[in-house]
Image (cartoon, rainbow, N blue to C red; front, top):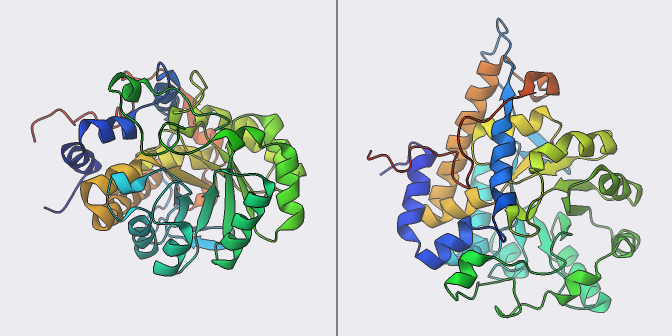
Length: 356
């Protein structure tokens, strides 16, 4: 069956995954408030469409770090893709290359980053968790550069591994992340602004800082020469009770003031979601669970198909909003309003329980 909607892809993913891996994909930290708030925030921004504009030729291709993107989207680093589809990072890399978006490969995916680069040549970003001291980090970054990666991403919001009670209640050891799962995150707690300065001084590779949520940190990133500021709360999987990532966008974009690109993730699953972030100043939007769901539904072909459907949704949204280019998107096309649905991780797919 050819997927015609994102609903069908999500439904197939749920059918294909066992309960442990499904909960690992859709779950969040503690009360899952941050996870729900991401969706609540997206639903709280509504459109103010303009009419009688020529939208017969809608264009939305863009560039990030001088890398062309068919749509303003990147595949966010999502850990352990291999549990959703056996090919893991290589499968996602092939889908990204075929469709034309940028992959950010998590360092807790398999196969390793050098194998992915050899198997699927082309631009991509390596997201590094610190699992050793500065000497260890420098060696890995040197190998990242040698492998031809276009940029390095440091995730700044995993100082320690969170409590994910969907896993704990089932006594499930997650495939990555915790000490119990075999990954030592202790070195993540040693990350500081000095680490950022060290990387920028020693290595000639663009640096992305992921996990920014406040204007003060965004401004500090720019001052230290960070090349991309990435707004994220780890999909609601780390610190609970954070605000929605889209709600952090206005102050972060103001602090960055156009000096570097801004990425954002956190609950984005539909084309209309992506366009909202672009209106608020994002250069591109990271898709994490979207990527995992599509991989689980059918590997690379399903991920390519999901991106095609998302592209169609972006085109329709922009046309009905009355804009034909990314330059025409601006905050004035949005306003705040009360959501009409109760938020949860999959509330963008209200027909999941319907019998179609």
